[in-house]
Image 1 (spheres, each protein chain N blue to C red):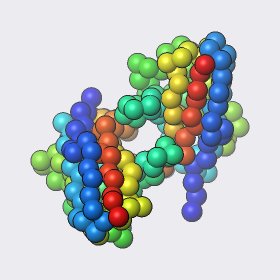
Image 2 (image 1 turned 180 degrees about the horizontal axis):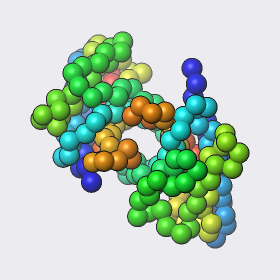
Image 3 (image 1 turned 135 degrees about the vertical axis):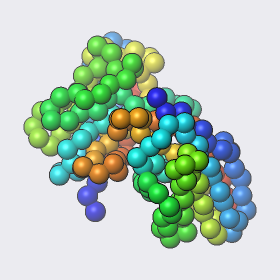
Image 4 (image 1 turned 30 degrees about the vertical axis):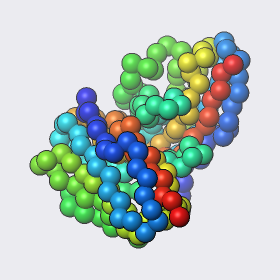
Length: 109
Length: 112
């Protein structure tokens, strides 16, 4: 089973700050997911990546397969970015996802 | 853009009652999943379903749980006799042959 660790658990930032959230996992994977969960509870998929870097608007996700590590960056953070960000990875030989505990981000105006 | 839908958004039931949570996956997807998230905890895998049968299940998915794709569009999770500890947010997800899973908005189940 893959173990997933995220850091930090909680993050408070001023509007406009650059945000980094980290994710480490224990078993080599095919692809990693970054998800966003808003206070209402719904989950939205932000990225799925298996190598390198992906960018969508102000969000950037990177992954280093050799080091088993991924980062999610938010540039020019905004209060509407306030949410829980979750990293999820498949198990070895499996597509079922193992989830990190999430990083609760609060962006203050 | 196609999306996964789930109904109801919130279900309240009494302990011992049966509940059925419904999901409509994206139409051309072949693989279906149920996950749950107990309040304050991380999301956990329950079961995956492919070709009209369970492909993987976790230790949480005991005999009280069952899944079905009754009509080629819906994907359901049934809990036969609910317990207080079944209170959670239940998420459905689906994918095509790629790895990317698309999540539904979730059903909040409250067992009283």
